[in-house]
Image (cartoon, rainbow, N blue to C red; front, side, top):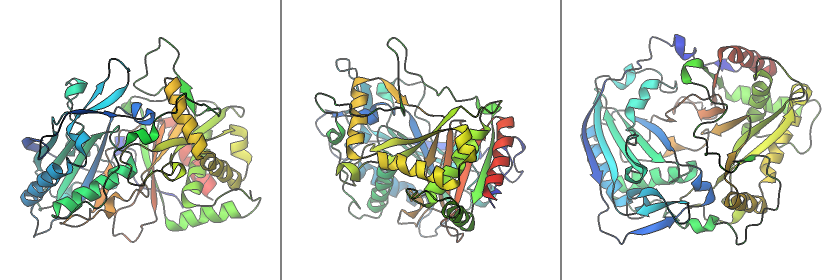
Length: 453
């Protein structure tokens, strides 16, 4: 149960080609089809703390009716059309000198479109599920040496393989989308590429998540950490490690494994408030392993806090088509001694309670907290789940992706959940990507299998 998917990267499989030999042929600035009046776009307090890039790659097998050159033309056309309902994607991020807040300058400066090719066939680059560092070549960077107000907010790269297959790499500033709204954007891009209308009209009114006036912080928020006056906002997590110091492994949980965890949570001492779902049991299991493997010495009195994302659209009666970030960090906390000794159902109950805690009133309090304080989520680690976002379900004229994945930068404080490859008859399986220092990884792996038994 809970089989290891691959070896650590430092002894990676010879079947993994890490240098994809990508050559960039053309770079285009994609402008909106019609000139619009420049405007400033308000960004919520959730958007404010997300000034960093999110990079994803979407792989497609060869389709004789859609060679990569044709796909590139259709994507360019689709992106041009998309810059009408998503006009902010043609803008730039700027810091308003008066309000000291980030905002989108919707100035029509344009998105980017990049065309490249690899000398390999898609089948040669290895298992797509394995987070290959070479995948970074499939996504154009947002020009790190360029000033913030000149950086494009959206860059799409089409990379063709020798077999006729191709990859679409997308880099967006996280302030533009969360996972759900990014899937909507992809669905709209696919629809426009097929000369169809938008699949879903986006709601761009970010004032829906504006703080109240005056702010009303009605709850304690231990999941948030205030930055003291005079201290610069950190650019990296205190838990982060240089990548070379981390091993990474992928633990594959099959449908049978997940059902086993659910049964284990239901059997024995059962917590009546535990909601036995696939995510909750996997999150509880991962939390236990991470908490008990952290640090050089085990401290039973140390408190471990796990963070995990909760969508707040329905909790605030917002439209599901809201195009900004509408996700907050729920949390569960306990001493390591309790985490080690309590039944799985108790951990599931704590994860459940974290989700239930995120009511509409609580979410408003978090947004208002961000109005008063300068800070960020505070926990031992974050479970970032791409498991059921459904990027591989998006329909394009040339078909659905063979696989969609984030470009992974291994961090000790983030454990990633992501689905298995499409069409492998394993739609409900989940892969758990863990990056830890070597000694902690040994502990985590041993605990992962011990608590699966």
